[in-house]
Length: 253
Ligand SMILES: C[S@@+](CC[C@H](N)C(=O)[O-])C[C@H]1O[C@@H](n2cnc3c(N)ncnc32)[C@H](O)[C@@H]1O
Image (cartoon, rainbow, N blue to C red; front, side, top):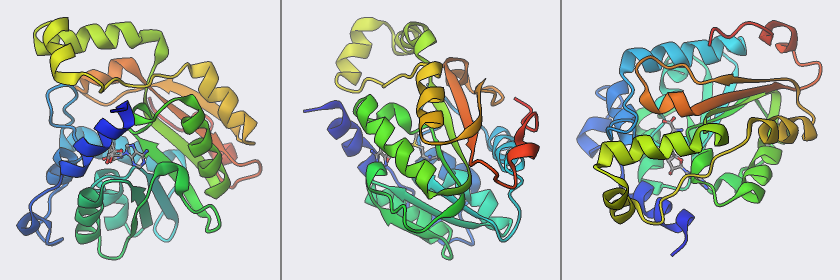
């Protein structure tokens, strides 16, 4: 069984319980947990999450009435705060269970059960992002095809966030071994669940190849997020996009 098939099975099993997802009761913490940031490898608090989402939205000057789409949106943890702020949100994810949770948490959002490389590029949105998704992809060709679609769909800009940095892939693995009690135990438990990592230069060249300008790659910075030390964020703008001038230097990480 291939890596991507095993990851798909795991994501299919995650969701929050139906009684939690009446959207008047759902909490941001529930969605963060459903999206896998509660597993010990890389927990993220609701406070740190809120700060990071706000910084990302500020990077693109996203305000109420703008549109934001997420590839691999899961239960919608990233989109939830923009949704509450009046931004029009949409997302695609191959996990039907997580998409169902996102729909119930954000009834006015548009969510689809869909592979990342099948997103519709006909209907554009202001900003399109992926957070903590690219490492589940089955190789660089697949990743490049997703990037091409994301760039075609974005009117203003794209953000590929929380990407495993190839430069620190060995350190990241050593860290995971340490948390699971050694390389052997890790191999037993996580066989076939490797992460795809990316060179920063590969990401920059791919984004520029799809026409993005002002491409910036920065180290991850989410408070107390331990996986973050091995991850980067990449941002790009469409040429002439309204935010292109304002993007430079506007992110604080
Ligand atoms: C760590 S979760 C992140 C969820 C969400 N982006 C967030 O920030 O809360 C990774 C998500 O990527 C989705 N995913 C992984 N590979 C995918 C693919 N090829 N197509 C669609 N979704 C995918 C999983 O189903 C899961 O929901």
